[in-house]
Structure formats: structure tokens, C-alpha cells
Length: 446
Image 1 (cartoon, rainbow, N blue to C red):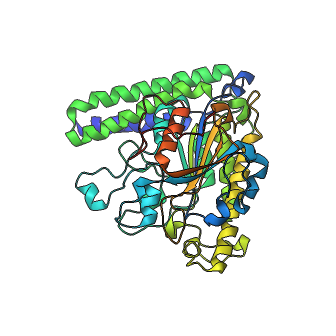
Image 2: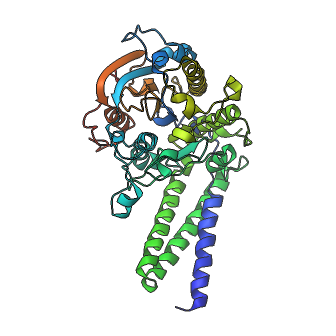
């Protein structure tokens, strides 16, 4: 094969894949029935907060439906019947006595699997197990344009003994490799809405989809023709390329299912400088993404574990780093600061849940059709323990979740909760999750 033909082929690939990515619209059909198409469709949000909680102000004293909200949970008072407080759950995957607790806790937060060091990975061990959101995305995510969306506040922080990816990410694919998250609000919006054209007619949509399909067909044909002429390593790269083309084809097939009527007024946000503004703007984008059926699976990290957490809270009159006050050393002053931080974090959750609950989906709400899992990588920031984790499951009333309860367990695997959520989302053939999730968690479903 000549140098010239190789260059031409590469240009064809770039133009083909580029046209498909840039031109692939999210929402272009405006029939009202599409606004109702997502009603009853299960969605999932994984909401991570760093460095645990001040558990005495988080954990209810009594069990069942008559429990009293604790001070930290008070921002959720109006939605009490729409969430579960779950105490006594443990993450076995985080208990391996190697390296830092925050990296182990965050890396295994949604995998419930032991993470591995760089030397172990170089020796052939997988970095991690698959995370709960990616199990869902692999089966459920193919029904939306974007299989899953990983979002957060920052990409900073590391912990001893492990690569920084384990403390900065909670989503890991089937090979245990991390799924990088987006921390810029405007970039998250672009991911959801790039190519959106509110003036497009049904005929425009059909013509554009045919054009995109022909571009993808051409790219695939060019790639297959090149395969016999290149090395084994290049064929591996080519296989990755073809996988991307197939993913684009899947997205194209699902494009007409987007709920355009609900998203016609979407306006691109800026990137706020202040943390509270950035958090709320990202939560707004998350709600819009689910409402529009652009994606059904989202994870969000409100800071990273350990030193990757929020550095100070001037809006709460707290100048200390979150990690520092989480290591409270039983000092009352640190307890008071932690209670203020924890309360503010739950306020952000309340804001998210309130927005989801305000969106009608044909007699139910978006919250009723969404599982929202809120938790942290550790329980007490001073002890670094991975049992009795602070866990809250909100939403899902239309999916069978029995809200309005405090359920207490005795070191039950949090992996069992994740197995329940996977099955509730409609994933099939999954009977085990993580290191110890062998049966669904009892008591959470109607």
C-alpha cells in the first residue's frame, strides 16, 4: 500500500468519524408524543460525596416508617416518603489493607471489588471490577444516545499506594478501566446537546440520519479494507475504531427516541466560578439529560476523596479543607464544621430531588422513575471505616422502591443493594455483583 493511499484513508476516517460525531443530533423531532415516551423509563443517578459524614447527626435513632429525621437530613423533609435511609451496610471491596483508605473506598465505591496497585496491574491484574452504573449502561444505556455520563466537581487528588484514577473516579468499565468524568458544566451540556437543531423538520431529521448512516457505512468499509495491510498492533487500534463506529450506529438508531419537546428550550450554561453555583448548574444539566432521554445513567462526584475534596467552604464560613476537618480527632469544633458541611451537601441532594420530582411524566414524576443513590467512600472520616456507611436511596416509587423508611442492617454487603438496583433497572442475567453481592438486599422493594 502506498504512502499516498494510507494518507487518503486516514483523512477519510477522520472526516467520516468527525462528521458523525459533530453532526449527530440529540433532539430533532418535536412530536408531543416523544415528550411522553420516557414515562416509566428507569433512570439512575449515583451521587458521591467525599470523606464520610458526622454519623451522629446523620443516622436516625429509630427504624421503620416512623423514624425522625436527623439534623443532617432535615433539608429532605418535604420528600421523606420518597427516600430510604439505609444504615449498617459495608463495602468489603474497600477493606483490603493495602494503600490509602480513600483511594480504596472511592475506587471500590461502585464496584465493591478490590482495586489494584500499579505493579499488580503491570503484572496482569485488572485495575478494578465493573461499576454498578456501567453494568446498567451496558444493558440499559443502549436505549439512549449516551450510554452513561460521568460528571463531577474536580479532577484533583491522589492517595498513597494507588494511581490517582482511583480517588478521582467512581465509574469503571467491564475491564476495570476508569471512565473519566467531565467537570466543566458547559462541556457536560455540549456532550448532551451537540448538534441540536430546534428548527429541523421531520423531513430534515430523516435526510440527516440517512446522511449520517452513509458516512458511518463508508468509514466502516474503509477500515475493513485497510485491516489486511497493517500490523497486529494497528489492527487492535482499528478494532477500537470500528467499535466506536458501531457505538455511533447505535446512537444513530436511538436518536429518534429522544424527548425533544421537553428539551426544546435548553440553553447552554456558563462555567460558574463559585463552587455552590457550579454544583447547582451541573445538577440542572443532569436533570435535563434525564428528562430529554439523552442518557439514562449518570454518576456525579461532589468532590473527590481525601485531599481531592473541596478545599474550603467560604459560603459556610469554613476556611479549613474538608479532609482536615473530616479527621476530626473527636474535637467538638470539627464536629460543628462537619455538621455544616454535611447539611450543605444534603441541601444539594434536596435540590436535585426537588427538580426531578417537579417534572411530570404522565401521572408519575421523573423522580418516581429514577433511582438516586447517595453515599460516601467511608463512614467516619477519622476512623476511615468502610462499614455502617451513610447511604440514602431516593426515588423509584414507580419502579417498586418502598420509600419513607429507615432500614438498619448488620454489616450487610452494599453490593447486595447494588444488585437490587441493577435488577430494578431491568438488566437481565445479573445474579452477582462485586466481591460479595450474591443476593438482592431485602426490605427496600414493595
